Structures are given as structure tokens and as C-alpha cells.
Image (tube, helix red, strand yellow):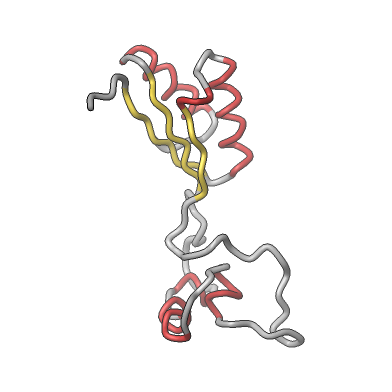
Length: 125
């Protein structure tokens, strides 16, 4: 199967900026069915959506508390908790560049226009 067009991947720090880029692409004539926006992470699970206080509630692991990782075993929790991001001493956030916007542009000229828009909104191509 041959796919026509150019695939572009842009990474974003902030979901708001990624969504603004999405809207700008739609306004510029790109079709929504040719684009996809997803959160990516090196840690499993959807993340922690509720505040967890380790003094009053049960926390499965340090990785769950600090990284928002859903771990399936104690061993995995221990291994993830050894990551520098879990300690708070890391020099980068674990969620850095956590949003990925993918799109297919029909040709090189259109792809260049899409890259300009994505960069304008802070996307890393």
C-alpha cells in the first residue's frame, strides 16, 4: 500500500499550544481527519488525575505519586522510582515534550506551510 503525502510529527510541551496549532492548521485548510493529537509518556498509564497525599492515603509506589505512572507490580514501581525524575532532583520534567501532533500533508509545499505553523506555536519538528 502506498501512502501519498508527507508525514510530519511535532512535539509540544503544553497541550494548550498543541491545540492552538491544531486549530491554526484547520484554519489554514488542513483536514482534521489527516491529523492526530496524543499525549505520550515513557511511563505507563494515563497519569494521576487526583491529588494523592501519602500521609493520609495509600499510595501504590513513589512512581505513582511523583510520575503519575500506573504500575502493575511492586517490582515495576521500584524500578520506576529509581528514575531521577521521581526524586525531584532531575534537571528536566518527565512530561517534557509530552504532546505529539501528527499530520499528513499532500505535497512538499503544503508540508512546509504546516511546519511553519507548527513552529509558530512552539512545536519541535
